[in-house]
Length: 96
Picture 1 (cartoon, rainbow, N blue to C red):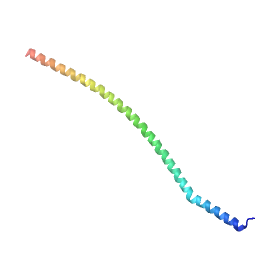
Picture 2 (picture 1 turned 60 degrees about the vertical axis):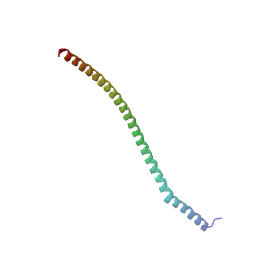
Picture 3 (picture 1 turned 135 degrees about the horizontal axis):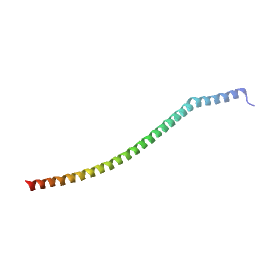
Picture 4 (picture 1 turned 45 degrees about the vertical axis):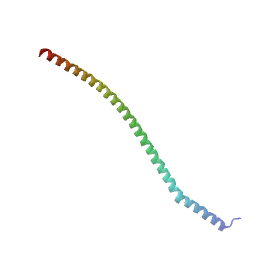
Protein backbone atom coordinates (compact mmCIF):
# COMPACT_ATOMS: atom_id res chain seq x y z
CA UNK A 1 0.00 0.00 0.00
CA UNK A 2 1.03 3.51 -0.63
CA UNK A 3 2.06 5.60 2.28
CA UNK A 4 0.76 9.18 2.50
CA UNK A 5 4.32 10.41 2.16
CA UNK A 6 4.80 8.53 -1.10
CA UNK A 7 1.54 9.99 -2.42
CA UNK A 8 2.75 13.45 -1.38
CA UNK A 9 6.09 12.90 -3.17
CA UNK A 10 4.31 11.76 -6.34
CA UNK A 11 1.87 14.63 -6.13
CA UNK A 12 4.78 17.08 -5.71
CA UNK A 13 6.58 15.58 -8.69
CA UNK A 14 3.47 15.80 -10.84
CA UNK A 15 2.86 19.39 -9.76
CA UNK A 16 6.48 20.25 -10.54
CA UNK A 17 6.12 18.83 -14.05
CA UNK A 18 2.82 20.66 -14.61
CA UNK A 19 4.37 23.90 -13.36
CA UNK A 20 7.39 23.49 -15.65
CA UNK A 21 5.10 22.87 -18.59
CA UNK A 22 2.99 25.90 -17.70
CA UNK A 23 5.98 28.24 -17.33
CA UNK A 24 8.24 27.03 -20.13
CA UNK A 25 6.33 25.07 -22.74
CA UNK A 26 3.23 27.26 -22.91
CA UNK A 27 5.08 30.50 -23.76
CA UNK A 28 7.10 28.67 -26.39
CA UNK A 29 3.92 27.31 -27.94
CA UNK A 30 2.47 30.83 -27.86
CA UNK A 31 5.53 32.11 -29.70
CA UNK A 32 5.17 29.36 -32.30
CA UNK A 33 1.55 30.35 -32.78
CA UNK A 34 2.52 34.00 -33.24
CA UNK A 35 5.26 33.05 -35.70
CA UNK A 36 2.80 30.93 -37.67
CA UNK A 37 0.31 33.80 -37.84
CA UNK A 38 3.03 36.20 -38.99
CA UNK A 39 4.20 33.78 -41.68
CA UNK A 40 0.62 33.40 -42.89
CA UNK A 41 0.24 37.18 -43.12
CA UNK A 42 3.56 37.49 -44.95
CA UNK A 43 2.57 34.75 -47.37
CA UNK A 44 -0.67 36.58 -48.11
CA UNK A 45 1.23 39.82 -48.66
CA UNK A 46 3.65 38.08 -51.01
CA UNK A 47 0.71 36.65 -52.97
CA UNK A 48 -0.73 40.15 -53.35
CA UNK A 49 2.65 41.51 -54.45
CA UNK A 50 3.02 38.73 -57.02
CA UNK A 51 -0.43 39.53 -58.37
CA UNK A 52 0.49 43.22 -58.61
CA UNK A 53 3.74 42.34 -60.38
CA UNK A 54 1.88 40.22 -62.92
CA UNK A 55 -0.59 43.05 -63.57
CA UNK A 56 2.31 45.47 -63.95
CA UNK A 57 4.04 43.10 -66.36
CA UNK A 58 0.90 42.91 -68.49
CA UNK A 59 0.59 46.71 -68.49
CA UNK A 60 4.24 47.08 -69.54
CA UNK A 61 3.77 44.63 -72.37
CA UNK A 62 0.73 46.55 -73.62
CA UNK A 63 2.65 49.82 -73.39
CA UNK A 64 5.53 48.37 -75.38
CA UNK A 65 3.12 47.24 -78.10
CA UNK A 66 1.62 50.73 -78.24
CA UNK A 67 5.08 52.25 -78.40
CA UNK A 68 5.99 49.99 -81.30
CA UNK A 69 2.87 51.11 -83.17
CA UNK A 70 3.69 54.76 -82.50
CA UNK A 71 7.25 54.25 -83.70
CA UNK A 72 5.96 52.65 -86.90
CA UNK A 73 3.63 55.60 -87.46
CA UNK A 74 6.47 58.04 -86.80
CA UNK A 75 8.65 56.19 -89.29
CA UNK A 76 5.86 56.42 -91.86
CA UNK A 77 5.50 60.16 -91.22
CA UNK A 78 9.26 60.63 -91.43
CA UNK A 79 9.26 58.87 -94.81
CA UNK A 80 6.39 61.06 -96.01
CA UNK A 81 8.19 64.20 -94.82
CA UNK A 82 11.32 63.16 -96.66
CA UNK A 83 9.29 62.51 -99.80
CA UNK A 84 7.53 65.86 -99.50
CA UNK A 85 10.83 67.62 -98.92
CA UNK A 86 12.21 66.07 -102.10
CA UNK A 87 9.11 67.10 -104.02
CA UNK A 88 9.44 70.68 -102.77
CA UNK A 89 13.11 70.78 -103.76
CA UNK A 90 12.19 69.52 -107.22
CA UNK A 91 9.46 72.16 -107.59
CA UNK A 92 11.80 74.96 -106.52
CA UNK A 93 14.42 73.77 -109.01
CA UNK A 94 11.90 73.67 -111.83
CA UNK A 95 10.56 77.17 -111.10
CA UNK A 96 13.67 78.82 -110.00
